[in-house]
Image (cartoon, rainbow, N blue to C red; front, side, top):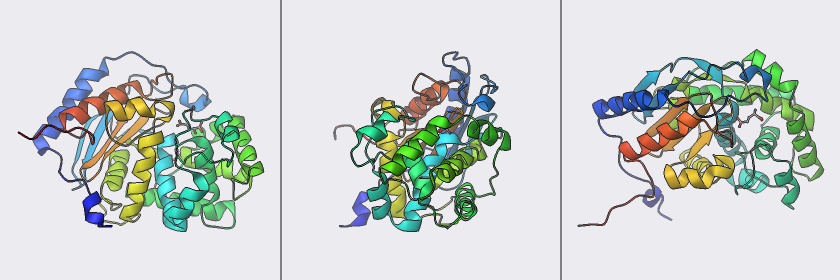
Length: 325
Ligand code: GLU
């Protein structure tokens, strides 16, 4: 097959237009009051609901920001696409797909039922079960070796060394019995390749990596740029792996509301419980937002509004077309 035919073309509008639309989105959605800050991880409950940041990074490395784009927060589920990319790079995309699955569960991110219901134990790497299974596939014999692989890979995606928010890590580790339950169930089904407790620990640690909206926009832009970081120039993962990762983000990035997301926004996206969101426009750039109040499915309210507004105004919807005149 000719790979070139798979590649979407086009680019973001000019810098002045992007910068103006980012400012407009920030002004427009700052006043939104819906949603609630996640509280099931005690350390996240204290997040300021007023915080709101937007960053758009082009594949050429330009970054446009509004709000507190340098404020740090834990990456949480936004880690999942990058983890999947790193595992694909390490063991091969085919094997990663066979071992983790790539189909939507239609159920919440932390569903135990989804694991039990699937006879082969497969879910996808965007939900907790698939992401815990993915951490178990990280190269290395020990927890520390696996962690070194994961931390180095995320830092390459960010283009700077990332560190763990120890307070969030400790807080989640002390309360994440459900994720441990998922890991134990996966092991019983033959869907885990490392110790359940250690895999849950690794998963929890990578969810606690501290990032900014600015970092995330560049990380998303790396996925939009065939795996090459737009600023550091490093080839973090191979281009076909980005395509695989973006496909799973389309079907499962927003959990049980992934259908609504692709319908409204028309781009691969991923949400996280700390209030971050990333959206990827292949070939064009990455959008990241941070706003802690979430809807009932665990997706940032202002983040979704921003993604819909910018997808439309920047002309990014992958499924939209106009008749030829
Ligand atoms: N660390 C969180 C958990 O496993 C991630 C969930 C999310 O961001 O949606 O519960």
